[in-house]
Structure formats: C-alpha cells, structure tokens
Length: 249
Image (cartoon, rainbow, N blue to C red; front, side, top):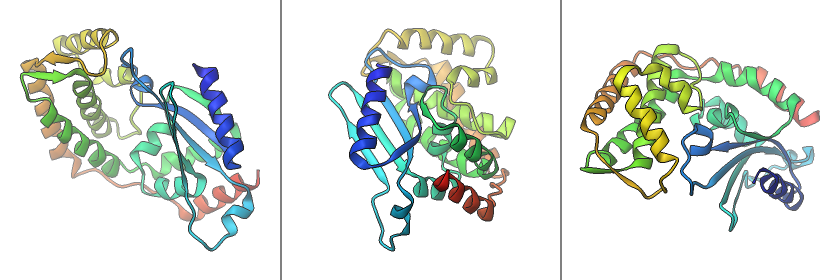
C-alpha cells in the first residue's frame, strides 16, 4: 500500500504543480489501533513555486482527494501551514510528529521542527482535545459503545493528561500515552487494542462501566486543570525568516 500512496502523491504533485514537503499517516493507523477496514488517512504539507505567493489574490490553500482503494488525502499549502502553526493547531502538530512518514524533505523538517516546538501552546492544544473528549463522552454512555468511539475518547483524554503532566507536544502513538495508566485499567485498554485489530469500524462493544467511570473522571480532571496552562511562544520574525528560507531552498 505504501507504493500506491507514493504513486498517488506523485500524481497530485504533477497535476497541481506543487512539491510535497511532508506526507504522513494520520488517524488510527498512525495512533496504533487501526481496524482491519480502516482507511489510510494521508496528510501532507506542500509548497508552490515562489511566484505563486506573489499574487495579491486569495487562493485555494487546501488539496483533498479520495480514491476507490480507501486513500483519504488532505494537504495544506505552506502559507496556510504557517498560519495554523502560529495558532498551535493540534492537527498540524500531530501530522508533524506522526510515526508513519511517506515523504520527508529533510531541510524543511529541520527548519520547521524548532518552530513547532516553540509555537506549541499547552492551553490551546489541551482545550482542543478537551472539546473532542466531551463529544466522545456522549457517544460512550450507552449500554453498547462503538469501539472506535471508545478509542477516540481514550486517546483524546490521555492526550489531555499528557499535556498537563508533561507540558510537551503529546505523542501520536497511543502506546506511548499508556505510560500514564497503570494496573487493571491499563490491562483493560491493552485487551481492547487486541480486540480492535480484529473488528470492523462499525463494531459495538458492551460498555465497561469501570473504564467509562475512569474516563469520565479523567476528562473532568483535565478540564479543571487546563485553566492553569500557558500559551505558546511564537516568534513571528523568525517564522517569516524560516518561511522565506523554505521557499528558496
């Protein structure tokens, strides 16, 4: 499948006259708990030729595609990427730290990584995941719960806990978040990971009230503590310099 993904990305580069600087897997395949029928969520950052950025007119800064063989692609132009980085966009940060990489321009990566670390805003990213956690809590209160929703809640809630306890950009791999959980609860989660690898996206699982109670308490604790977090420290002058360097490399 990787060769098919790279082939599709080359097609996009040619048809849209762009250069892809970074392309990664997002979603459950990057998090480490994919179902057998999970899509491939391909996310990428790209740039145009320099002259494209000299126009005074607004332009489309997003490229999306969906193929018949379950490749779900979405990419952002370099300028849009910098605007989102300034806001410490959680999705962008998760792309940049994805463990599954398809395309990587090393110079771009080396220039961009220090900016990503400096722009990371614990409070902004924490509230992003808190909002998602609350949404998934509602979906996980019935007698039966879609296993996919259970894992989305687990991931967002543990990500919030990571930010509170570690103060760093949270890992994308779910297994790395599990260091925040111990004992019987961790064993329950690991058993569910094994189960999810055998079940389709639409599978419903009996609600584990003990695990649900743990998650309810975790989300509540995240909400109470998130108010004390600080914002990022972006340096717009340095960001402009790096933007220009990436365009001229």
